[in-house]
Image (cartoon, rainbow, N blue to C red; front, side, top):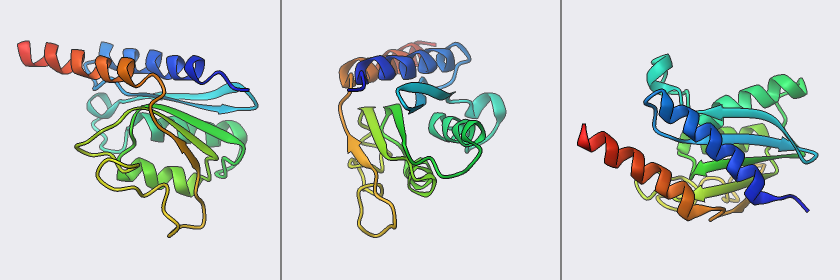
Length: 151
């Protein structure tokens, strides 16, 4: 049985790295066969790239590691509910399972605003688990924005 908290904490470490660059602290890891095969954290500001979300960076790296775009047999752990762009990438990459920390009521596309990932409209529908270390993941974001507002 996978240790969901262990993998979410790895995603949280990625989020901490993002924060050191002044990025919104969101992190993600891709797991296959019980091992982390890819990591990502927000890099939008540093790379000046609107697609440089933690999930997309981790998914791209996982595809490189596996040698193919189909990530069947993989799980994605992400500290914040994915946006529509990332949700689309999760569907298209065929990730089997998605574990989400905090929900995103402003832009989430896995249950908050809309639910793209758990829709029957697509040819792939991953299993989704919400709330893995949700309070800790949410606290990271709240602390980041609190400090940002003070500046």
